[in-house]
Length: 145
Image (cartoon, rainbow, N blue to C red):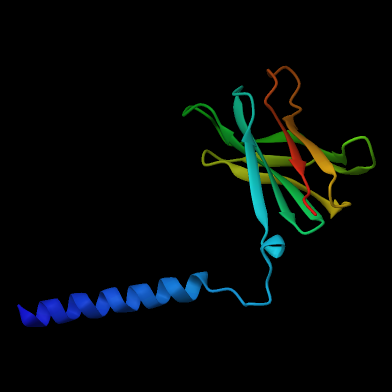
């Protein structure tokens, strides 16, 4: 019994030490340099869409995710459009990939760029398959100073 308690106590200490090490950050790293992720889900058509924005300082990256809405989905190529711009300003870019979407879904497209702090970035991720109902996710993300 004592041997079992010693093993459990040792495991708890190692687990706590590993968790502390995994969350430790250098003292020079400020809160504003920690990337933040914001995600929104889109309309649930034939595909479920999700748009995520990662902000790291003045750099923003938008990526889309598509997953089938039905268990009867058969893997196929689907066209998409991912676009982003600064609200009232310049376009960051547009990506128009065609990707094979498996039953488990996949990340599709990527647009990134540097933007002035204090601005807001607007993004749209949508399925562009003709004849399908729209599956669109839109996001508006502030870039803090």
